[in-house]
Length: 273
View: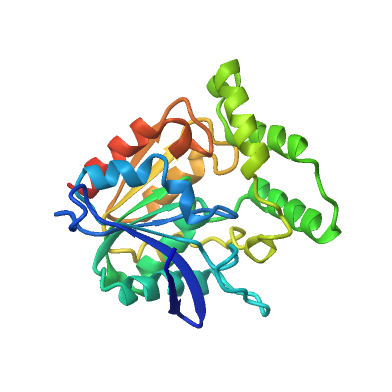
């Protein structure tokens, strides 16, 4: 995986060209992952679908995800937005389309305010314009756990993540659930390794500021999301002047992995519109 030196840090990234491997006809699409997730989380479903649609697809490991450069002094949401802006400029990919999930959605929203000339349109998945009481409480608990030094057994972490991030439909499908539990047990983030990212999703009410976003946006919510409940995404869509809202049924916070076909269809239709 190549590394770009941008905004004072080294960012791991991948640059996938379109279906012919000589550059897609569509604009570049940058995919920004959520808390604790590496860029490779997009490889299974979104990268192939976007490449098949002719797009150049760029993914990155956000600041704080090893082996991307450490930031001993800590960093902010604005730093992470500047990282994405710096990578777009480093690759000569702007203006482009940007897709962000969860914390990646917050990063994208701040990018839209700070550097709108780099973005033509954006998809904001499972994102919001303010942290409510539950998001704030979950974040505080994650920080306390990371700072405690307690190591939760992978099997315990896996079932807790499943309950928090998957839909009842997936939980009721025993074969799918076994697959998910296996994946989560092997690939679940260690809170101690992503400590610097924890808490960044606890934002003040940014909805008034997001009324200044001028680029077309698709706010994509997941019906059974217990982390960023759909009402928070509806608030966000209502605040952004040129925003559309779509809610995908039968999936939770990991909706882009639970129902990738439905999510990809909505994303590609919007990005090519």
